[in-house]
Image 1: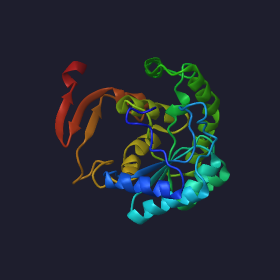
Image 2: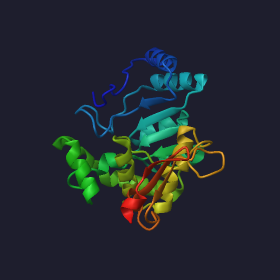
Image 3: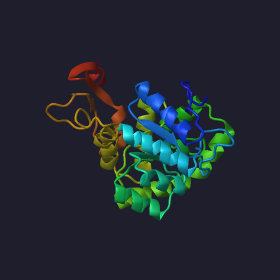
Image 4: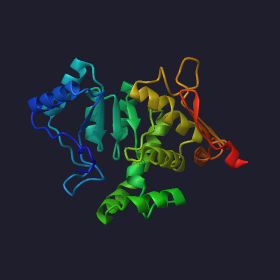
Amino acid sequence: HFLTSGHARECDGPYGFVQAIREQIKNGVDHIKLNLTGGIMGPAWDRHWHSFLLEDELRAAFAICHQRGFKVMAHAANPQAVKDAIRLGAHTVEHGYIMDDECIDLFLQHQTWYVPTLAISHLTPGQAANAWEARWVEQRHLAADLCHRADMAADEHRAWFQRALAAGVRMALGSDIRPLKEAALLEMGLWVKDGATPWQTLLAATINAAAVCGVEAELGTIEVGKLADLIVVEDNPLDDIHHLRRLLLVLKEGQIVSDKRQQSV
């Protein structure tokens, strides 16, 4: 399996999806993620331009989620899958490696969130642009064929990210890969490298990400009544997004849990 927990529950037929989703709900999940397509980081038969689900399977899966009040996060990597996910009421579309103008229009019409996960197509030996990216790539030990697939997808992925950003699509920052802290920092760097401003990137990683996760009442902004989960950095990340790595303080619910102020003097 790609993930230690097992990549996903495999289902066949409308009732197979309904049964599996009911079981996941019974087991206490917060949301349902549906894989509508293949991906970049997968086996040879699992390509991102391949769609997996039939129409009746898609409709059944979305119907039971909506009936039970659970949001759907849609892994969708090609134009038809992106459009199907949005029309059926997905809360987010993850990846969107290949899209078209109609996808952008539907994002805007339905106000669906787009989580582009640039790291998946951008972090390979041939694309690593700084020491942090190079170290990440070295530690992941990606197979050559997966790196090739990522390299082949990167330009189009970047182009549709830029189109979505320019059009005003609602976007949140998510890395899709672990470890979460380093992956999130790398993803923020990739957003800026691909044309987002540091401010747009920070919004995507904070208030927008909180809204996607349904915790915007507690997290995402510094406001009275919210959890004071905060960082203090040495330099302004609006000048350079990588300044987020220069931590001085980390606060958890208002309490200092890491203090590097003396080390920086």
